[in-house]
Image (cartoon, one colour):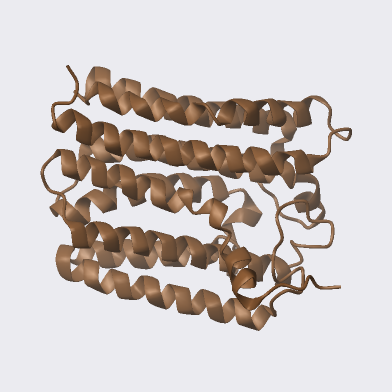
Length: 309
């Protein structure tokens, strides 16, 4: 029987609020670097945040819809509720919600294009297309082990660098390098998600990296992603003259420590540990990502203000 929830709560569930740090963190970091360089622009910064959130929500709705129609979501699902599979919202409503959200993202893109020109149009269109193609289209990325690449590129490099660009009308090497760390951290979130769903994804024909290479690989990938994220601010301080305050980003590791124990526990005892225990680990990693993005952005700004030393 479908869960009985109010329409408002149903749509909140559909947007998956806990995942939105993946959209917000690179915008916060990119804006911090822009402010540190004296090119902060309030309107473009706000539009970049709204656009990123709209694309994230549209991607979540697309995942909800396409995973259901492709058979990727079943009653055996271990993760948080998917509103289509659970019968909370009809598939047609979720599809309409996705299209409306993409329309809102397009509106923010029109404004940003008027400010920063044609590169924003190209980046915005590709970002929206890839968000839908993550689970939809003739070659869904997540079904062929390419979801990790998508997340690293678009929720890291593209989002951070473009946030800076729409404010400065110039590319920043620092923002691009920061995007590497944010992309790696966002990928760590996806790793937890795919490790949790490895068995059900495999049964549904969804060939994520966790399905292809197993639990042990996913554990190594999780730690590799977090390690790359940690190296980025250190390298920035040592090699790119970043403010030492950007090392605040390392606080993002703190929520991930208990998450790492849950990730390792599943891999050490496959078949005996309930993979639902990874749901809190996903939330912990999302909080770590939020702290990481804030640490980079705020740290860059504090350094520019002369707060260090």
